[in-house]
Length: 106
Length: 434
Image (tube, rainbow over all chains, first blue to last red):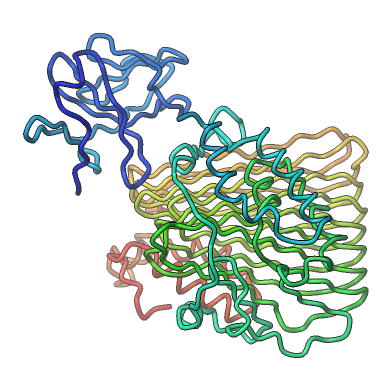
């Protein structure tokens, strides 16, 4: 398991997110949820499309196409048309820099 | 950067290659450049690419390959067939590693870069440049490849073994071979395409194969893709069949971080038959995609398709098999089956068999299954004293063997069976059994 540097924690404001890509070509969405950093796979399990054009509402990422919602803490799907959860990736902060793991949580 | 900007970046990387070759070829290439500029790299909004996102691939930069010496690697990875052997290192023909031998009368096997003019009547005749952005890119800038030309009634007893070796490069390379097969009336041949190489290679292979079968021709085509799990592999096989011709494809996909195989078959003459057998086996985070399309354009044509997938860890498989029966193609038979075995909770398959029928007197079937190993079969093996893991391994291999056992060349069969057994989870402990 490796860690990928994302950005300075101060550079990701509350309610915003940044994208990083792992060596395995998995795109991750690293978000600041009420001061807490969380990362999920940037794929909507409904149609397989990416969600970077979506927004964060109440700790959930909202898919821009059909409105599916996923909890950024657990990856759990909270609104249709998606029915499958998405992967969550561990995040840590080292010397003020946000780092995300390249392996998802089990 | 947007996908369009990546398209421009890719085009500028291949620019030196576009001016390679005689005038007619550079004109053809220029046309393909324009097609690529319009099509761009495929994106997930295209139905055919819905489950295979090449966005991450688009962001990568590749350079053009240079002639490299990798004879030792080629010999190590060789299937060891008694065959006419052509070795390509990062897509460039290696004369020293190849053995052409004495070809029978009426058979020509020509490396493309040095014999471009011979390819003029064949190149681009079966594979449309606008099939996808990758097909256009291949025509715009393929580096080398082979032309296999069989005159009427020519029978090639020995298989033609095309070995593509990928090497590890500081800057990953874009390998673009073109394979052209033209079979005259009642000609017969067996072609083996094999992709393997360094475990550290992280190149992109973008290959296009065109097969043109005249009346009564019979071609068997094997493809074994064993590239490293850091490689990208995009391939399309295009087949045009005339009256009473027969084409058989055995497509085994084991390697690649992202591998996509398209097969498009046009059954354009009465009595033409195509058999498509396929096996894909994914581990880790591999993404393996197979898209097939069979067009029944003429009456009394037959197609049989059987693809099997084994997916482990977090790997993802995609299967899309489409058979289209056109209006006047009466009395045809089209059968299609896709079965998948998921060895892990996190593995995924997206499978979509499709039948589109415009004729009213046809026999067609299609089906798809996805599941786990049969607990009753597992119990039967365990009751005979076989440990659980090995029993799971044997059943998994048996599932794969339903496809592998159709391979007629024993050397190819054995090597594929070994390779499949070697790619199954280690805990299955099949070493020494295959």
